[in-house]
Length: 246
Ligand code: MG
Image (cartoon, rainbow, N blue to C red; front, top):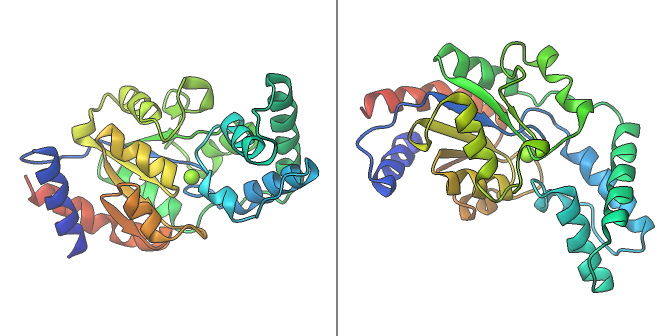
């Protein structure tokens, strides 16, 4: 079983005898909500207007970065300079407006089942997102009742370093009263997987868009699932292997 192998490998690499997960630190965009196509469209529209040559798909690779760092990456490439703080503020605001003009993102298929599975195993769920967009964060209590109350959310406002830095996941562990040795990180993007792996959590990568699975393997995922429904389906098995590894 790939789950058994992934756990054995994680324990060996972290020099642990066992792993009993008590916290699941879960990303939002592209993980809980199928929102990445909309973010990509909003970014693409914004940057084409600026005269920046770019593709729709490249924005999936930048997922997890802060807005400012995405803007500067593209400004450096196109104009050889960073955007000024005023430009960053204005552009990011406009990107948010474009995003909100699009259809409402739907809940990621399988994600509610995944969250319910964690909760039924007494694993505390914590939101760990690089986003600060209210339009989605405000929907969490309705779409995921009881899973991500205030006080169990890490957003862009709570950290000084975004993913791929591990700080957002460390903050999430703090909120859950957990340590890396009993935390699971779940993320769909290379930057998020890098952050999860760097935090020491058992890191699950889930491909939910055009980013290839190998990009999540290379980012350091302990295990990669090819869709959220697949992950939700196999999660009980994974959690049971953790129990038997003790
Ligand atoms: Mg994501």
